[in-house]
Amino acid sequence: MNSHEAVERLIYKSALALDEKNFDGYLELCDGAFTYTICTYSPEIRKDMIWLQHDKEGMKTLFKNLPRHNSDHSPLTRHVTVYTVDQKDDGTEAEVVSGLQVYKTALDGGATSLYAVGKIYDTVKLSGDSVSLVKRNIRLDTRELGIGHHVPF
Amino acid sequence: MSRNSAQWHAKPNLPETHYVDSSIYTSEEFFREEQEKIFNKVWIIACHESEVPNAYDYRTFQHPGGENLIIVRGDDQKVRAFYNICPHRGNTILYDPSGNAKNMTCIFHSWSFDTKGNCVDITRGTEGYQNRIDKQDVCLREVKCDTGYGGFIWVNVDDESMSLKEYIGDALGLLDECIQPEMEVFHYHKAIVNTNYKLWHDTNSEFYHDFLHYFNRITGMIQPGYYDRKYEGYKYGHASVGSMEVQYDKYAGSQKRGVGWPGLGPGGWILIDLFPGMTYNLRTSVLRLDTAIPLGANKVAIEFRGLGLKSDTPEQRAERIRDHNTIWGPFGRNLHEDLLAVHGQGIAMREGTDSKWVIQGREESSTIHDEVGMRHFYAEWSRRMGRKASAPQEQGKIEAA
Image (cartoon, rainbow over all chains, first blue to last red; front, side, top):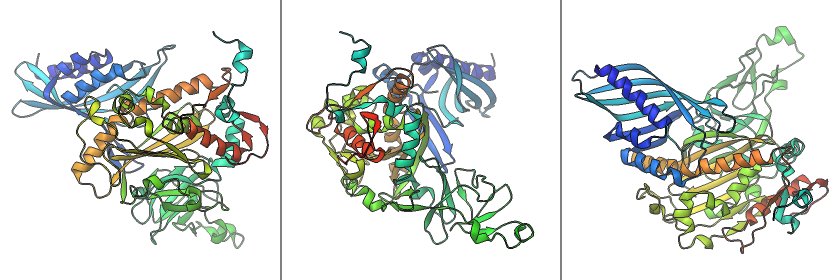
């Protein structure tokens, strides 16, 4: 498998892991220096906003605390399409841009609705045959998220 | 033992000030009456001055009474508010939620208005109207506007209303020192929820629901001083809750806090509810401001703002954003829980579900789990509506609490 395919596999596996609430599996895809951010731009206040930001340890704590909170348990389905993979000249990292759509399915009745759209900007570490997420920046177009959600996208 | 239908519908064995009829949350008739008798009579926060810092900056605002407004700063630095309706053919003048426009020009036929509300151009005016309509006859409808209490921009669509100062009275006294420094909005989002706006304000008006929040239980409820916090009611339905020292480090993942807020003790938390749907919520290093904008009896848009100090360094601002996002924001631990709960109330109480009473009967010497904050709100609601919240079908004059 070439590095482009390996990167794509990594991005898709990360979406599957979160869909399945396999949080340990998700963290296994992340480098020790991993950072995660959800951000968006507000035309109302004309500012960029950060809505969620953690390092790997912070993400681990967030996942660990989830069962202690009251949450909407409607499952989320992440549809990701890798648009571009740009590898650095030295072959150590790749910058990846993906499209993101998040769907929410109601537990009662199973109606699915589009919940959010945006793009994922990833930095992926390439090391021999292994690939890992170093930085994930999710930039949302959708800003009206109703009652919100405890699980990251 | 469970109850049968008659028992379910029987009035609670409490004073009539200690429960409400759930139809006040579901009736479209009452909602339209609230728009007329409450929202179109009181002062409402439209935005913050940091959202319109420069001359010709504007913001649009969906007023809870139903009117669409423009908030604009003139070249004289004065902020004014107008209906966002072109007097010509009733089109929306400004479509974007914010921007900068020396003249506000309607896209439909290019009628143009300045930041004082004057009509400055009617395209081909003389050819079409000869001398029958003059520009001064078709100026914008101006709405009362004032700035204060932390730099917020307030509007009141009632030309005969009392002043903002009289309306607020002493209600924001606990925050006097805290809202003196110049502030800046760094977070804005809107949540649209199928529930009644009062249910959101109720949630902000009682802390008994701390049982909902793991974060609040672990950092507040089991800590010393929690049960000493007291409610105080003010004229016109406003209420405040005094501070305590919240032990933020008890929540795994919380980081040591260094920024704080001027006038607020370490770990402090002051919350002030303003009738009929605004809340100042100052804790950790952030002021959160909620504005509930009802869209119907069972639909509300809640605007959430997070504010820091204008003097913040990038590091201080980053800490405020981190503090904000831990519990608030669309992915915050507490906000989602609060919204989930009022969403559930909206489902349980919508018309046709045979919901009947909502109990607000806790009495604990006005301390933190007392429901006096909600009772104080409904006393003002009843006075303005001429209907008791416990028996809203009956109308009549109701005295202030």
